[in-house]
Length: 437
Image (cartoon, rainbow, N blue to C red; front, side):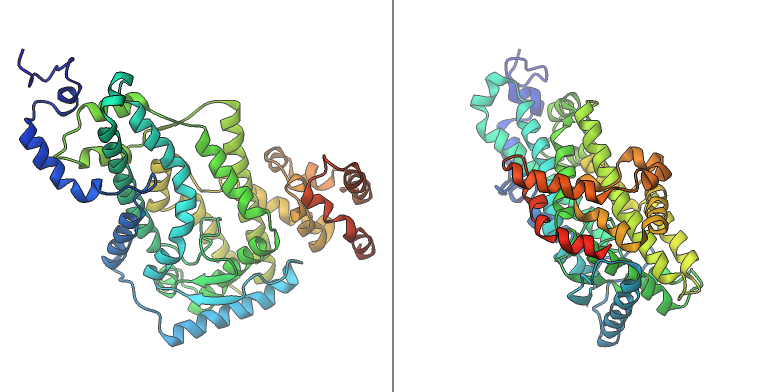
């Protein structure tokens, strides 16, 4: 049979690219030149940034365009964050975490958050990049070095395209830097997006200043948590990475796509990525990683929800309505969140936000603000997923006997090697803790 036969069992390239002759193949790959010249990590972040910025400049589906922030909006944001921080002083023992307040356009949000998206997405994309090389039969891999490199570059470009699109769409929805419960912006900067706040508030029938102030409360509360709970950021990102490690790429689906790949139609691979190729492995470790992430997100969001409510309720007539609107918004997640769920197989929604919020509120009643916020001292002290099922049990369980904990800390510090370094540092504070309570 002729070498061009589509079966091409003896000719792996024919199997992958059908009956194209070498000249057509050369021309097709030339078109892919820009895509394939990329040699960086698993995601082409330059492409992601360009596409995110293009997406932003097109405006959102409802017709609102991005706009640079004027001096009046900038000072309104600064004033809202300043007032929010003042109100939060009554509602939490964690001090202010906002060194500065900034007002961003959508394009500025993209620029400021891309480094964090990189941290979140790279570990997952890495798995897919490796799988793209692995779907080639072993005997081909030696011959097909350039082909593997090319496929990885394509994967990087496709991911870059998808993520750029998702970040661009998300930039049209977010009102600050902490909307998804992770700290996406630079630390110590409370950021709000005036154009999106305007959009968010327009059909709520609530005074514009109240909407801005409520959203400033939420942003400033997140900033306090991430600034003064030093282990929290790495705990959340570690949970995302733990989840990524257990992701299994659907190699059958990938082989299928690669087998039918037409170099003149690179969109095919993009469509395949869009449909999701990830199967979280149903192993105890993977379930635990997902539960850890969901619980951590719920605890962060629930704490913010409870603290902001305590600060806003006595002062803003619209506090209840705004709280409910934001809870629903977080529960449903917008189109961009769904894109990330498809892309990295991971939903960043705190499914148990209400349970966590109830738990923090009960803790405030039972132990006061200091007792509640003291639980952030160490990850082992936080409520677990099963505590969210039984908040009362957690709140009243032995009322946390801190003298017992102090004794354990003292022994751990004396015992040397097994002590955790971040526990040891509390040893010198014991006297202060005792005198404080």
